[in-house]
Length: 291
Image (cartoon, rainbow, N blue to C red; front, top):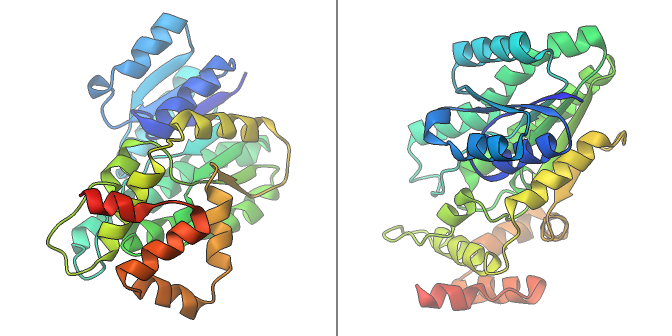
C-alpha cells in the first residue's frame, strides 16, 4: 500500500484518480481548496469503505501547501506518489486576456505543482523512493489559439518535468508526464461554451470543436485508470498521451511546419473546419452553425 496525494480532487480527473488509487488498495490524501464544498468524494469513500482522507489545500498558497503536506505526513506517513493534477483554464485571445487571469493560470498550473514537488521531494530523495506524476495536457505540446494562457502553463510544466526527471532519477525517484486529450470534464464543458463579442474567430471554432468531440465523451475515469496503471508500472517512459485523440492531436501538430501551423490557425472558417473534418472526421462546422 502506498500513500498517494492527489491535488485538485474535488472533481474531474483528480476526483476519479483519488477513487482509482483507493479502490486499488492505496491510502489517498485527496486535496482540494474546500472539502466542505465537495462532499461527494468523502461520501463515496464512506460508502465503499475506501481509505481516502480529504485535506484542505490551496496549491496557490505557500503556507497552505507546506502545512497541508506536513499534516498528511503526520497523519498518514511519507508520501510515495504525488499526482499534480490541480489546474484551471482561461480561454481568450492574447490581446483580450487579463494579466491577472494569466497570472492565476500560471500560479495554479505551474507554480502550484512546484510547491507540491518541493514539499515532497526531500523525503523521496532521502528514502530513494517515490513517483511524481504531473498531469499536463496535449496543450503542453500544442499551442492553439485561443488557448495561449493555458498552453503556456502546460508547456512550462512539461519543461519543468523534463528537468526534474533528470534530477530525481539520480535518487531513484520517478517522474511522469500524463497528457490527456479532450476529456469530459467541467473544464472541457466550459471551453465548449460559445463566446460572443470577440473579434477573433478562434475561440468560436475551438468551442465548436470541443462540442463536437464531447458528443462521444471520454470520461475522467479513463485518465484516472491510466494514471493508476502508469504508477504501477516500472517503465522508464516519461510522457504518456492519454485518450483516443491524444496521440492523433500530437501527431497532427508534428505534421505541420511552424509556418503551416500558423497559417491554419489564421485561416478562414471554411478552410479551418474543412481541415478538421478531413484530418479527424469531426464536423465542428455543424456544431458552430447550431450556436
